[in-house]
Length: 423
Image (cartoon, rainbow, N blue to C red):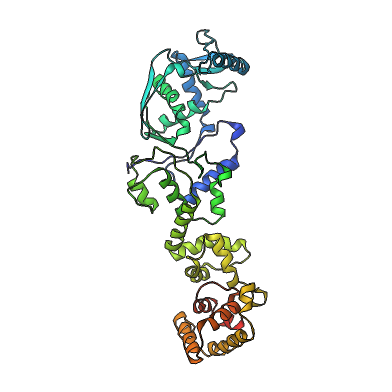
């Protein structure tokens, strides 16, 4: 909408919580969702010299200072504040000690002694925080690594970020980051904090609500278009429109109409959207997405074969994984095909006789197209004074071993003449 850029940054300055497999999972998820970023991927761990140069500038300008207080001492200060009914924070003991670098020392921001930090949040509106509530936060740890707040401010400035839109669990970081922008003499970006997603019980979304990693939705056969559409609608609206293509979202999204109230995760709504995209996604595209799931089940089937089968099941399956499982009956050898108990009941003596009779009729056909097969079955039923239920169920059971599924003439056409007659 703004004609801007979408940049991707890997925030990996915390060595204990940053592993290559985590990064690989993020990148794979982004690519699967179709969320392509502009420019090169940025790794914070490769920009340490840049962060440290700005920490040094803050020390030189008097906006930051060295601190030799141990973690235990800082925690004791916070306990004292709690006992007084005050907000727990570092008491600034090292602010005026003029310490230099040394083992175990950190660098802290010298927060102004009075005043307020005021900003307009894109979602929440005006927010004001008294600086008395803010800690002299750590900018550089004792191991020389920058903290999250230091690194993101430098990165956002260096990458010319204009809008920071994130979860409202970061609201408490924003006043601290604004103070950093001011100390460095930089223009502050626009901030917006969207509510965190809740579970159906209105509690914080967790694994007990079914929350999963993006890659798990892919493994379960959900379509990426459905998940993107669903997640966007959880926090934003455009009238009463429910269905959005990704390029349409890019054009429409302007930062307004963001929900200020937290939305609850609704698995049924997600499945509804997935059903829509299963129905509307072009057959060649859907067949290509389906093929890996079929391969996982042991069937190396050409995508062209799947393109012929997808229309039969796109409105019957809940996801690609279920669709692949449903299609296995078309790839199995006739001898290995198992018949469901309900379907087997239709293959009594009368049912078997009907199937054998129809096999002879089908063998004489020169055209094995769906329309011809449908007409042939209809004429057979009419000619014998039968009802379709005397013919359809046993024929379907013989062909795919199931009591339900697509129309039998479509199953016949999908299997082809040779395989149909064999079954």
